[in-house]
Amino acid sequence: ALSDLKTAGLMVIPITGRPIGWSLPFASTWPVDAIVAENGAVALVHDTATNHVKKIYQNNLSTHSSNFQEMQRISQRILKEIPGTFMAQDSHGRETDIAIDHSEFHQLSKEKIQQVVQLLENEGMTVTISSIHINAWFGDHNKWLGAQWILKELTGRDLKRELDQWVYVGDSTNDQVMFEHFTHSVGVANIRRFENDLKHLPQYITQQERGAGFAEVQKSLLLKTS
Image (cartoon, rainbow, N blue to C red; front, side, top):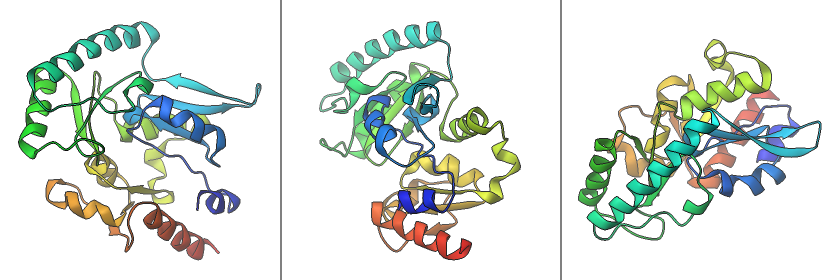
């Protein structure tokens, strides 16, 4: 599906709560223009001069370093104070946020999830819940600001001025900021498990879940542009 979109001449930019370490092999092999990771804080782009993938950050390096140390302290506090919590297995690849597993390999009840969220917010962190993780970071970046930032970095263009030319596809509560802003927003079918938790719903929901739902969007887009 990604290859077909790129072959048709469209820009494709995954924006994910997954860590930068997880994203690196995909940025190196997927037919995409960039990958924005960790809910908008950091991106992987192709350096045409060296033909390698490079990392770029929204925060300066000194802020990044001090935030990282503080997040490790808070991570240990969560594990100690809230029984049954586990850090996400991809935590070693994270640089600008922390992630607590609630559904990927370990299950947390809604009550435990709320306990974690409350602790993180009391520590002054921004918190969002994806389909598998509770993510938290310092600063006001999110997927929406990350989308604006990366388009400006790549092209110099203002995303807010051309929203009618873009489609956003998501699957969880940390996508609702995108559902709120994008003129054309789509949830793949597994978004329905979060419908009661969303203040902003996607404009459309696919028939199929996950990757198959994304491929459904791709086929529909190419039919409209052909």
